[in-house]
Length: 105
Image (cartoon, rainbow, N blue to C red):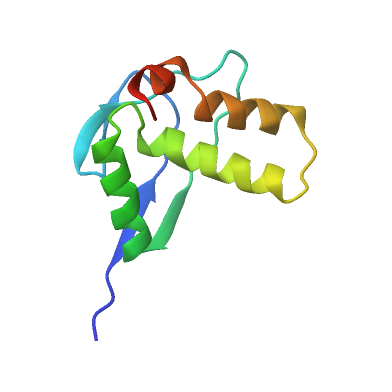
């Protein structure tokens, strides 16, 4: 039995356009917040989670894989007791950006 997995490849923020493995299209990397340190990572994920993420991003074009993963991780940590103003600010900022309010998501 062959198992398929989706892979998200995080990269350092640059001015380059990066092919998004998660959604299969090229997207410009988001601009970092002033003074924000960025860490690159790669993670395997179950195919159903990958597909749900890709479907969400397709329905909500004001979201991208970077914003979604950052919001999800920050939200999980804040909801599970990590007491950090920076994480709370990151979570709220990713969830409630102006373009999200205009688009309804």
